[in-house]
Amino acid sequence: MNSLKSLYVFFFPISALIGLLPLTAIASNSTIEEEMFGGASQSGPASAAPTEQLKAARSDASAPQQSEDKNAETLTLGGRLELQATLLKSSSNSFGDSPVNQSTGAELYLDSRPTDDLRGFVKGALTQRKASGTAGSQSVSNDISLYEMWIKWGGKSAIYTTVGKQKLKWGAASFWNPTDFLAVQNRDPLATYDIRPGANLVKLHMPFEKSGHNLYAIVDLENATSAHSPRLATRAEFNYGFGDFTGELTTTLAGGKDQPLRFGLDLSTGLGPVDLILESAWTRRSNQKFYEKITTENGNIEFKNRDRAKSAIPQVVAGLRYDIKYSDSDSANVSVEYFWNDAGYSDVALEAYSFIQGQTQRLYLANRYAAASLVLAQPGSFNDSTVIFSALANLADKSWLARTSLSHKISTRSRIEFAIAKTGGAGEFSGGIPRSVVDKVKSSANLPTAARDALDRVSGVQQDFTVSVTAGIDL
Image (cartoon, rainbow, N blue to C red; front, side, top):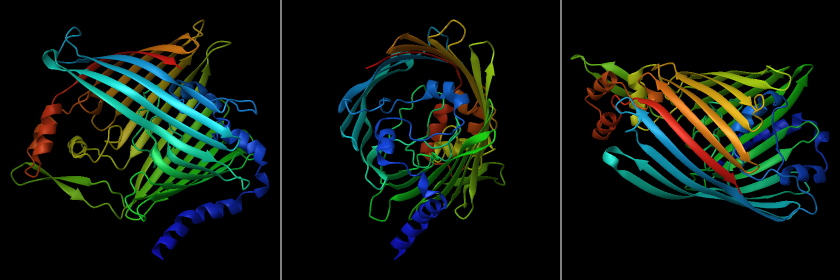
């Protein structure tokens, strides 16, 4: 009975939303099939135009983007070869003594479309990484990763089903996505390609062609160990337009037995060249451990668990994107974002303690962040180049990172990227924790030995520069 109640609670919003939408907006199956199985974008904000440069610079070609027709091939093979070298310059060594890490990878996919309403997709990678250490030492790791493997089919009811390991990217913001509930790991906002693995899902999708709305019902089996442990999620995407205001509103609900209950709201509104972005998430019954710091009578500090299971934990990203036209044929895209993260900390010692305990991840350690980017696509006569300036700041520990990248297209299917990043402050973005903070944390009487060892490894570390060169070929 409880299982039936759970299904009712989570799938009732889908039924209610369907009732609110005009059912006459459902298009003919042939039109929807062309959109769903032909590799075209399934959804997106109507105000996406001002941010196309930024999206193109950071998008992941998780499937071949090509239109399908009756004579299209039923099997497509492709992928990407990538070579990367990264120099890490810290405050304790010179450029000549700085270690160099190397990465060689081959990303391959197989896309099969035996019929108009059936599609199978597999994507994986072979990667070798060489990391340099002190005194000329080097460690080598080889990895075989399966990113995606799914089957998609449609029916006369205009509901499309995808089963298997598949990638979802939820959220309207560029740097932080607290509503990306089903992601296996957080996205790196500075990465050119999103190489995160997908999750094992059963996804039902009902598109509405005329209005552009989309409804989803999802069963997340990624960490399911029994019949009652999968997470359930519903998602509704609405395109709207009121005069000069156009955009997309998205609501998401996710949860399950002994799982956090999470609600998300995304809003992207376009007004002329300006995009206003709002992404917010609320979590109850969080499975993250939270801590508080107390000072003992002898002046030392201790960390205690803080119970927030019954509290709603908000996370809000607010952003602005703007296209600046600086010549007759060129424009620059400016993006700024502010992240208020109630799951993070304002105290650097708590931030460090939670991180070494494995309870918070990078870019989500602090309770306040800020970021900005400037994208110049094909500036001036450099029609094969893209320049991106990015900056991120942790407003709690006062550390920051500034990065400049130049991507140049050598030929139709090959590209090379040069990037340099500079960090400042002693904290998250410099790769370490200030020694004064480490000493305070280590003075805690209840600090585990493993945590003390982790603190020693990052005590006083400050990564000054990171220089990388990446060459890639699309197969």
